[in-house]
Length: 294
Image (cartoon, rainbow, N blue to C red):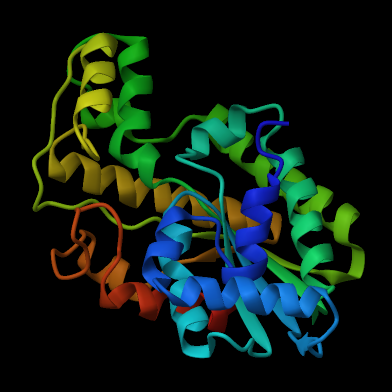
């Protein structure tokens, strides 16, 4: 039950379309306007607004930035297509695939969100996008290589080519589609995975040689990056190719962005912290995701 949406998070999504803490900061005083308007709507004093499609981005904090553009342009009213973020914490793709509860809890939470939002707006369809993988590329895959053998992992040890990883990913996408269609029926639309942002080459990186050293860095360095830039870029390409292949095979969508593909590294112009795409490009990505899923 770890990932079942909690009342406070549900309230935030209903009012400001994101439970990520930065959305409230982003809105400032307008946060209280959103809370007021939601209460009015729930009390029946305001006509329900029509939203034909809800785009729900679920997973790590990148979903917060991807969904800001469409929200900001329409606040406080809701357009026909609405983008929302359900932040499940610092979740990794590996963690989601290995968890016994992440996907089932996610399906339950999604149904709760859609049912409650349907009291305020008419939702004909839900498109769900998973935003996972960026943390895997920065630290998690490197750590898994250390579990196999101490010492700085080579590129060959990091590149994801194992059949077991591919099979796990295929099962994850297939099962997610199945349980979402079971929960939402005809309201369920497309399932997709958003391409994680490429690595930053402008920020320092670390080369831990043991699990204990890596663990120490994770707890002491903000947004640590394990591995040299060239290796992390090669890993990102391999990871995205795998996601694309598996999505295509499972009838899901892989939302790859041409700017990511062209640059293959995270420009300082796009990010303040070398991790989150939180500048102008984030707005472009949000519009692109909604366009691809319409």
